[in-house]
Length: 178
View 1 (cartoon, rainbow, N blue to C red):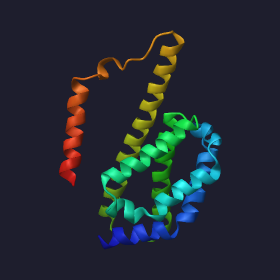
View 2: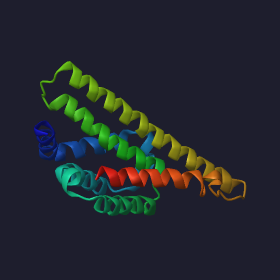
View 3: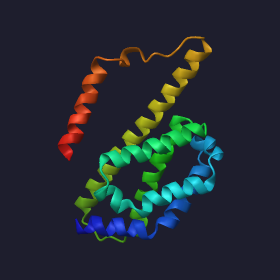
View 4: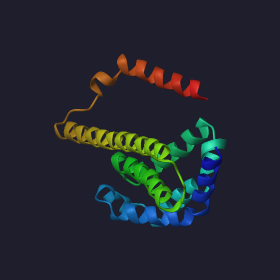
């Protein structure tokens, strides 16, 4: 736990540089072109807040606070006409920016086994992050194609049934993790 605390404090202490580095990545990414509609100061301040208060978010904020904050961010980006896939990609970039920083700057002496486990966790994170990103792109494309054909997208098999069971299981796991 001491190592985790030290890493969180390291991130918080370098939050300005992390936020500036992420802003550059967002501006340079081909997957975030519509973020040109978002004032750079807005994005940088939003990310700075996450990095600067990471300890609070990880240890002190309850799920309701996180839900409210990120729903606000999602609504703001929707109002700025940023596609969902790009919003999600920026969230992925935010996390990857942290990983890169920790790998390059943390200066941790670590046994090979621990490093291997951390690498595996990072690979899992990257896989699921990309799955979320590309699924959201597919969702957006289906919505556009449906509207071009004059039809509406109703979610197909996603209404009721299996999705409700999955949603209930996710809620149960979240409740048990607390």
